[in-house]
Image (cartoon, rainbow, N blue to C red):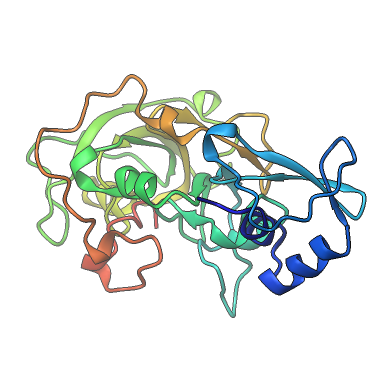
Length: 276
């Protein structure tokens, strides 16, 4: 059962020893001004986020957190990177910041919806191929392209799982899509898998080059048009599965190591780099 000291440590980014000192010094209160000094006080998830006041500042003690980030172009999906700014750094100030993990990746030149969560079970469901969660992208292309067919194979022999696609004028593209002058055609494409550079490789196989790329939907969650690039907001990730067909019956397999958003393996071992 989660204890008060552990919840304060997690949510405020403190050590247990630091929290113990705060409690003993009477610097932790409830919203009514009552002193909280029992480190073992239970904080039940069923009670929702508990509010505490530390040194006069109110804090919500979250058990789990999920966040939707509008990832800008020029930012990598990583916790640390020596050359580029990271999407993780944009989440500073989010609850349980240190525990957030990305649901898949978007590469340096891709913008759009990037989900983060502290819930490992939910992360597994969102990324495991068994659940076939659809991801929709809006794309700016260098020139004309052929229609995809069920026989389409990529350069490594992989057959992409294209759930839907359509050509579209620029004014029907999401405002988060970069408008490059070299983009002559535009399209929307929805995949139910996520493999290394999959969107770019699909359009390369169709005879053109991706100039601009933006993920606009993951399952039933859409990127809010009004959310500025670099901004984030809380989100209910269970909403991803609303309106979707249930996963096929079968044992709940462990996610392979290559499904981990933190995996930095080879091309074949990075299925969540779908837009890279």
